[in-house]
Length: 269
Image (cartoon, rainbow, N blue to C red; front, side, top):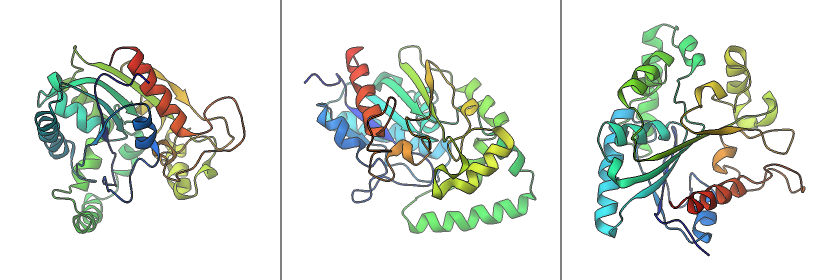
């Protein structure tokens, strides 16, 4: 089995950390390894800002490369992790260590929903963020900054970020979008889905497709079932197929990742 030329670095999104016994990525790392690839993890803070997480990722990429004699990485990033690694590449100049960047439902263009929600009194938002930061410190974050993190995802701030962090010309970028088919598709995200639907329409429980389109946009996927694919489904939160029926389209998210790494391998990455 011919695997990728370069190992994979999985970069998680907001609100979770990479843990050995409660893996953010579910069955996905095993599937990637079964294709003959080596997998590493970003291990950045769950609720760190783009700047602090980007700094951590830049240091980690350099350290892993040096310790293991790695020339480059194929980065697969979910949600805000895609913005974190773009900052590390473009601002902190680790582009020489990255061969490709694949982003899965990454808010490259910011969230219109957050634009509206952040009109609430700022002192209330800051208070809620401080309480959240205390929680994530208990869970292991070194520099949680929930307020800065959500402000980073306003559409205006995202546009400014994109101007300051253009794609590196020597790296292959590609982006994907997923969404639910109905508000009740994911029990854990039904309320946020309803809120985002009010402001932006169809979404994956947190983000709408307009926020996710970036370089080499590969398409908008909803799965073969009538529930679609939620933000949690994208990283195999439930550790099981979306359906056991044989249908056209995505019935198991691990199949999507298997096909993606095979395609990257075929492209010489």
